[in-house]
Length: 480
Image 1 (tube, rainbow, N blue to C red):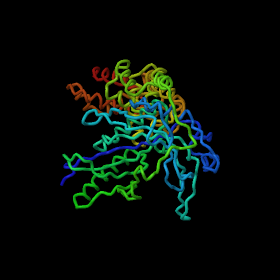
Image 2 (image 1 turned 90 degrees about the horizontal axis):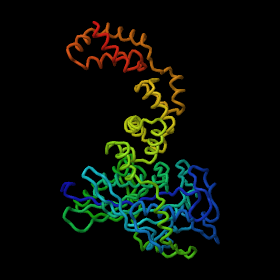
Image 3 (image 1 turned 30 degrees about the vertical axis):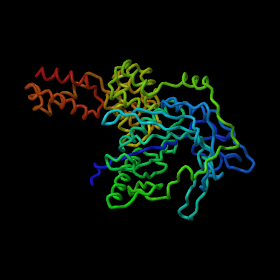
Image 4 (image 1 turned 90 degrees about the vertical axis):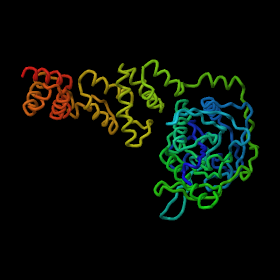
């Protein structure tokens, strides 16, 4: 039976590290990349006799995320102990939330090639992160770094509403964008700030009952998630078609081989033996507290897109690209305000900047230059100091070694040639070398002029003023 005879069902459990200054139950810092075990204390190391104290900012950020994803905020919530043993979980239990999460019944709308659709959000709850095992292949051992233990997380659990890898990717991209806009997480996937557990099952079309699901843990790449869903769905279909049964298990995705491998049988909720944490009081939120957070929510992506369509007259497609990341959107707004040329700034972001980000697989937050430098690049082109083609070279320099664009063009000798006598000499030289193009242009072939200008730009290594070249070529051809 073909893959088209099956329906794929996907649900995501997304973990986002919150951008608080301190951990969820103690005052240890949360900065990434510190030396191992330098951001720890007796509380996050789970020393006997220590007591956790809930960081209020964690609750605020979770409520923000809930409101931004159309969730109902629960005024009566609590923390629970989730019991399981991992070497990097010092307490042998994780403080999480079970039956009374902070946020429930939300949804976000995504755009796919088949149109828009709503993806339900079952719940958003707060919990602590575990530590990290650093494996040493040479010695065959592992070392524990507890800097990450106690870093605050929100877990966002979707409904099983996604039916393709594209649905899952668009959902995760939209969710990432929302979390960036409300500034509760930096969402740096390469640092593990945003990662997803991917649940996949398949069943024959027409069957009302879903198939048995498997779960792929801790995935932090859009590309990997899409590939893993495609592979796992096909693997499950092959197992069913060969007469086998799908086992509920936790899988590991291997990027190199492009396959999933079994890690362990998947636990159910009862296996974790949840019970209320006796060291933490219940969480009570007033209506005024929730309303105050709602009133102070930053502008969300959809609102910003609508404003761009109306205020800047951007196309739907261009606005969607720019608002896809808060960092791109902020760069667009700030640079436009400085240079006053919104159209040019938008074009740079949509074309060359987006291209470089895609080619280098760089997240927008990692763009090494700021709005002032981008605005300066636009102004140098507007003033005729450099051409657009030289501007592309300047942009590449800004990515490699960011500094003042004016310094770059002086250092590289890229200042545009706008001297009329020099331009005329170049034009005459190119015309002399290409007599056929003169005949073609006079015969009405406009492309001949573009060819001549291109030859002149090549001769001057992109430094000649293209407007002056166009004007001078037409003038000299008409004179012949």
